[in-house]
Length: 90
Image 1 (tube, rainbow, N blue to C red):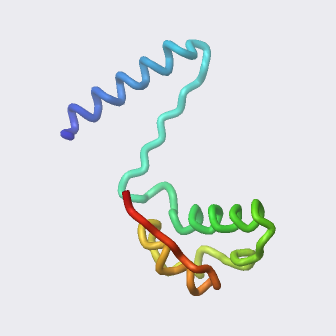
Image 2: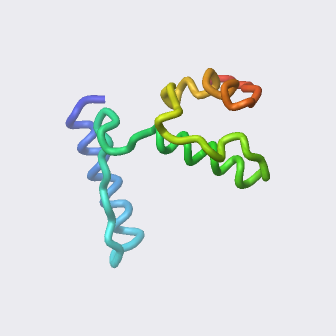
Image 3: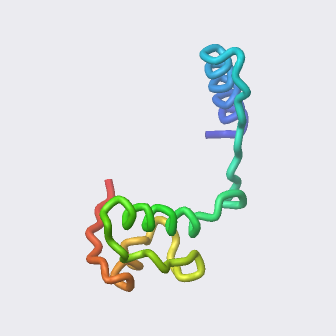
């Protein structure tokens, strides 16, 4: 998708949202090459949420500095946390 197509798509989505919520205050957030959202913190959040939901403690003490993989390789990290990883890609 080229830049013009992306901007058209963004404008279309913005109009669509404004049409559904004319009094709302929409926010547009861009994540350019991972500069805004640090996925390591998101990985920790998701794993600790798993613990919370399931009453386990695999990831209780886990911090972002402990995660040595990116989000698309998380299954290779899980055995270090005593978790058997079963991963599949669609």
